[in-house]
Length: 129
Length: 129
DNA sequence: ACCTCATTTAGGAATAAGCGAAAATGATAA
DNA sequence: TTATCATTTTCGCTTATTCCTAAATGAGGT
Image (cartoon, rainbow over all chains, first blue to last red; front, top):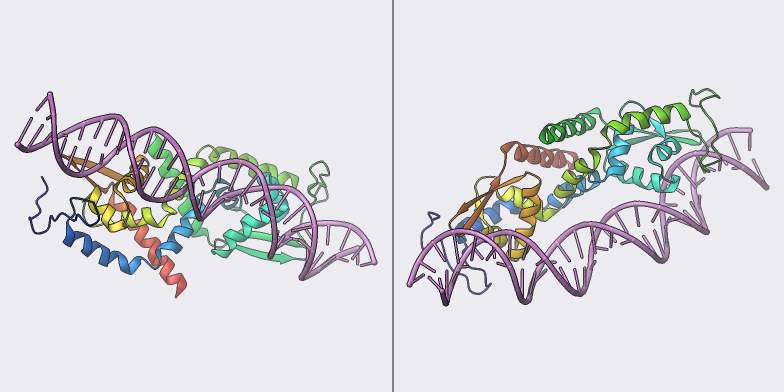
């Protein structure tokens, strides 16, 4: 059994959920309140990476910059669709663009990102055995 | 102008997308083919973190294990909804459960995860200034 | 002027997320 | 056994999100 006092282990019938270490929960709620403001942004960061197309873009740009149309070919997408994904990545600081005449070239904003990605990939492969 | 030869810079009318460094694209496609199998899993990993509720769970468990009902209170969700999110996190190896009588306690599977999360949070705060 | 590469906007179709209700599970206590 | 409790799971539903196409626009080049 959990070693909580009767004081702590209250029944709250009001919300219909039994069990409930009142003090502990409040403490944690208070602690989370600090980070809570940044949580949506952090989630947004991960949400962007939770997509194979965008991951492919980042990996494709690992060695060299590419123009939009070449990226489109790598992905097998239309220019418009590709441009949309590139914008999402750019807006969150993953990518930098470089204008060269009519062309636009994209590259990784920092190599650290790639290192992190590769690290995660390796972790994944290790976990799978 | 990009320094690509006329040979490389072909027009592929078949797919209606002009520009196109054929060799470069094929090289990259080949390179991506290796990672491509693991990409959905990697994306799934990030997708799971791209959600404030689940981030909250991970942060809530940073110091101590908690029973499902307490987590539910922290989140302000029903037990069922909470249990569902916990399962998602457990299935991907973020969380461990411990049965104690009728109760079930959840904890982080590894402290490294938390370190990574905190690091990302700090990076985010730094970026915002 | 016209063509080209890229971006943006608007729209919609398909998909997925996320929750609660309720039934099912599994453990404990009477 | 029966009852009760904490949790899990299934189901159905309502949102929300994703991701594309098409069309309009911008910006360069010829």
